[in-house]
Picture 1 (cartoon, rainbow, N blue to C red):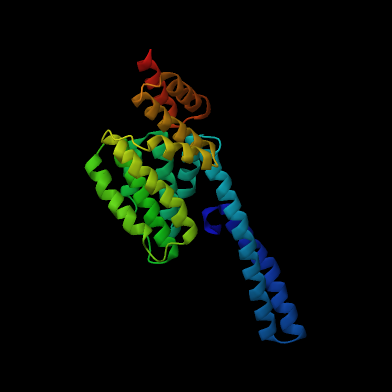
Picture 2: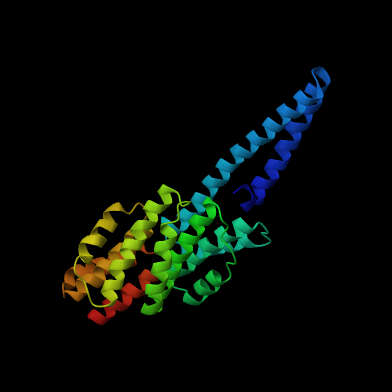
Length: 262
């Protein structure tokens, strides 16, 4: 994560040099060379760990621009900037997945698909297992967006397989299982089966920790209320999405539904 940000990379090299070199020289002169190298190495690893935490905090703040502020334009701009000149394959994959999520929530289907298509590998380790599951989650969302139900079904099967990967951490699996379960209900709704959908998305609303997740759940509840002709509840749900959705796609879609209801 340090390599995502030029600032943390610069700090890493500066602190590693100004701390590591004097430590190595001082202890190498006073005690012996190997002790100096050992302590300097510990110093460099400590600097890396501290800056890694700092970089992760910084990345969470960026993600919260999308998730809490619902500012998709700013989030996409930052992700684009971070991708510029990035050569680390794992970080490129992570940033491309983040960028595709931004495009999906902004309603830019063409750029979302182009970004997903540009991802060339995920890796075989724990990070790769996470990236692969997120990739199929986003692919499912894309096919829902263009109403390609056949590919929704195919992508959901790939998503399910990715969730069964033993290398996928329990924390990410539990989070993504909610998304998979919600997608199953959305698939039923696409086939005009609404049984149990209201409870599922009421639960999604209750567990939502970020505003964008609340807006998404509220918008979907609005669709469900429309299906049952509960117009006052649908209006309230769509108005919530418009008020809190920022620059997300839910705002324009909610406005369209309210206009059709007049």
